[in-house]
Image (cartoon, rainbow, N blue to C red):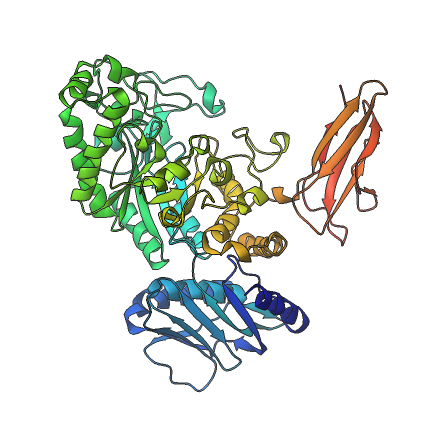
Length: 606
């Protein structure tokens, strides 16, 4: 398989413009010639999918290539220059074959998802050749490694518009991301309309303004302050997004975070807390004490049953996410109702009380014919049999515990998939958490731990990137943190590990910068950052300076005389010495002499 891919690359470099695929397909075999795409090209899709695929295909071909192709239902009729989508019998979900010849393009798959995925590969194969668009002739056979390939967007901490959400679904689906996890509620905002409980959005969707103050230093709101920061999605908005996603082979998974992370909920309905004598306001940021629902109050479960009834009607997918993470149990320890619940059910403390809470919510979710997902904290106490686990706390090893416990598991390792983390040196990146997940770190992620047995590995459903939004106030900042790292996640989730290749992938990313730019995406170029470090000899006051970067095929150039590096500056070829007090400046240049990223600046001092 690998040999055929290498042969494919060599042949195309010699004869055709090279298609760059993200994610990399399972098998690509090159043929001679090209297929020419024009306004005369006819596209045939199965009649059952015509209503969904016709407007999608026509819109993409118009916006991407300024072509007005005919999209028809049923069997092909012309003798040449057509694209034929064919549904065939098979049992491998999302698998497809894409066969491009000079006369026609044949796409075969067992279902809508496979045909849609094949279409995304076809779109990536199209190149502009002078005045026309062509595709090199080849045969691609492909199937995903994982069924679950996701992105989580937190819109509670900073609300984002319906249009922004749809834009991301549209872009990410073109890289075969098929799950959109929508974090709709948290301490800082309730973002979904629930008709039975209007105060959830009348009050819970709005908070006091603390713009310009670092997230973790924000003071709590007072009752008399104006609450002007926020927003929410009406049920009609939700339906629109869900339908938009469905056409793009994306399942939307709502998250209603309970029992913790519920400050916006209890600000709206304080009777659901352990001590409803408190005056609650939606959190402005930072810590949010007293943010848990009362686990001893049956009214809480009746309320949540009503909420999940409306949520289940809005989201036709198989999952509902209930959060379950980071529950502050301080009030549970003091609450008479919670303590009575522990006694009546012979529970061993507050951890098992959380299990009790989660298990009752699981019954509610399953009564709506849905599957419950929770963060790995729901494994504590007595666990949550029947749930699907999102394993995020790398230091707790839930990626081992969950599948070993027989839980279907989605790997969201904090060290590899939390794209809210910085992607370069803190001094060179926008405000954010201190940890760094570079593009190469994201790409190197292996979601299936080697320690698992063959049977345990079957419980790994896939992986997901998480975009927690404490430090993502704007659309541009959101996109800067997502792209191009989401391309890495897409390949991790789709492509077999043996077919991954960092050199090939980084070239594909460069090509996709043009694609992202065309769609007005504010992507990051932090992959071109130069990392600098030094070791100072305090006897001679000379330092050994070390420079590094994650990309290959480019040149690091540096200066130590307070000038900005240029294409003519010294090329870095190993550790060099400088005197203490000197300032080192370094940049990454391509072979043509173009500066690719920002200039790194640091002073060599004791």
